[in-house]
Amino acid sequence: MMTNILTTDNVKLNESFSGKEDAIRYVGAVLKDHGYVEESYIDEMLKREEITSTFMGNFVAIPHGTEDAKKAVNETGIAVVTVPDGVDFGDGNIVKLMIGIAGKGNDHLEILSQIAIVCSEEENIDKILSAETEEEVLAIFSEVN
Image (cartoon, rainbow, N blue to C red; front, side, top):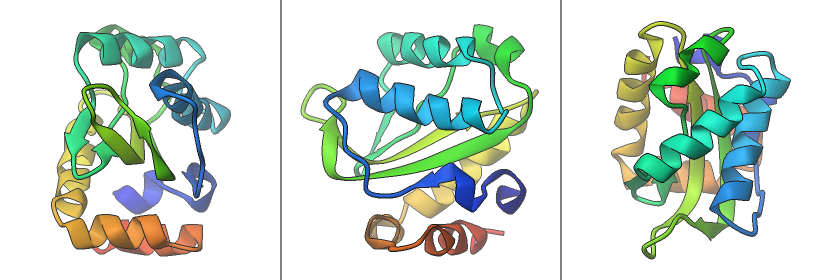
């Protein structure tokens, strides 16, 4: 399933951000620019972050919208953004890999389980962060299938 919703266009390598809000807006814009979500979804991603951090550990954050954001999702998609210098997500939590998700219906549950499999191994995160091409990132996620 990951290969259908993750394309090289949705992978952005070696980005840098001044803060968490800029980073979340950026990953949300990748989803919006590729038609997965409406503009309003980005604001819901920021609201979600205020409710509870999407930082997952291992330098990974999974920004996504609130339950109210479902109506702003056109189709299921994910965006992967690497931030080699890291961005502070608060409380000393540094994020180097952001995986923005937008799930239609309950699709997000399967996406999250696949992301968890990939990101549970630090070796995979290191590979993603050191990837020189978008295709290398896709290959790491496609190994899950």
